[in-house]
Image 1: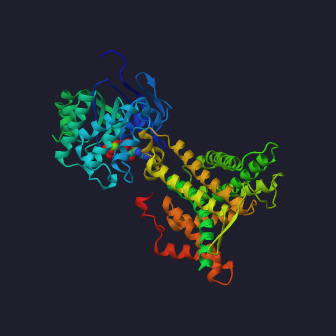
Image 2 (image 1 turned 90 degrees about the horizontal axis):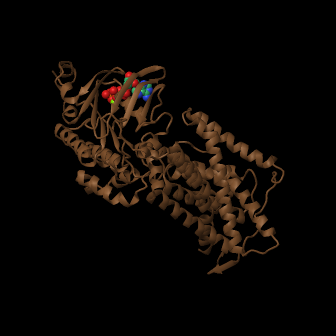
Image 3 (image 1 turned 30 degrees about the horizontal axis):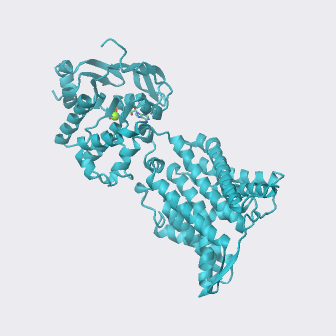
Length: 240
Length: 303
Ligand SMILES: Nc1ncnc2c1ncn2[C@@H]1O[C@H](COP(=O)(O)OP(=O)(O)OP(=O)(O)O)[C@@H](O)[C@H]1O
Ligand SMILES: [Mg+2]
């Protein structure tokens, strides 16, 4: 894997009102990988994902996707380039139906002939959504809303999917389900994954590689296997 | 009895126009939480565009069919008014997207004043009132003692059709979905690959277009002047609030309610001078008992 990585983040600095949230982050994601980013609350994980999708501006450094710099490209254009983002807290449109939420995510797709197939895929992964297709998304349970958020990201047809704590607030069995689904999306659809998780144990199980983020800097990185056995990671993120 | 049927027709005619304008207030509020106080004046601008285009078309030596002249005037008014509305949005409102609410309110009021005074100062227009030339022959009919004109029926029907179409756009199309999504959470909308700015412009275009339909029809029935947008704008704004601001069908309902208040106030009270009093009283009473308007949902469930 020596060719250009799918995603390259180089020395990225992001500040909010002069306070640095990311102080020079560098990481890469190769095509086909699942990379996970773990770190405590406030470490800057969401900020990094938001910078990649163009939702927050960065002060210096660079982000490139397939070698194309994303500096000053509008967020909606970045989606069109193939990056989908399941935001923290799901961000579903509660006033639209489940179907409308999914449909809206196909806005930039030119391959209209594949939409039926795309819906089938999402309903295949999440049969619950199919049953609740015409229901306002606000009436879904937390777990179902998370399925919808992932389903919506699938509908954009991105080649790289960013997921921000998809297991947040879910019961343990649902956490396992969603993590397994992410692995399935990676293996069956060939979607590259950058996964932010508080639930480090689950994330490290499916990831190929991992980065540990501490207050705006990467403190550790390596193969997932290796990090899982690292005593520092075990103490800080895997509950000893 | 005939008298009341007659007044109901009149109320529907006036109410249609309020409803068409109220839609613009409600849609912009729905996605920007901005009361576009210039919207009444945008409506006024539409009547002048209709006035100039129709005068021009009727002045041509070559005689055009009336239907063509009417449709061309309507489309020109819609296009011209949309352009004005989008320019106002881009130049005046967009730079204030993150500014405090009060700055936006003051700017909107300022834009309204600017439009009024520009029209007065602009030589070919000036302060005098005018009448849009008759684009087609409006005949009066009398059925069972109720008289109505071709124009009156056209106002009611065309407005109704425009509202049904707009309602379909908002409920069924991707653009409508995007508008509703923005009203819920505009920060997540870009992640769907949608440009929020584009949808905002489309919303202004839709609002201006329905106002221009109202403006063209209104200008064929009543005289127009640069200050006409003030009173009509307020009445349409009250319509939107009464119906539930941010709610499409609420704006339509509110428009008809205000139309009935306008026509029926002099029927039950000594003079029509009470109509503003009645309209504003309704607004105040309603805001006490149902602050979100008749069809408005509590703040967490808008549009
Ligand atoms: N919009 C904002 N304005 C100001 N500061 C912010 C903003 N968003 C995040 N921050 C700050 O930036 C830092 C990183 O926040 P971020 O949300 O990226 O952390 P995180 O790793 O995702 O945390 P969590 O696990 O709690 O989601 C925090 O100190 C946070 O307070
Ligand atoms: Mg976060």
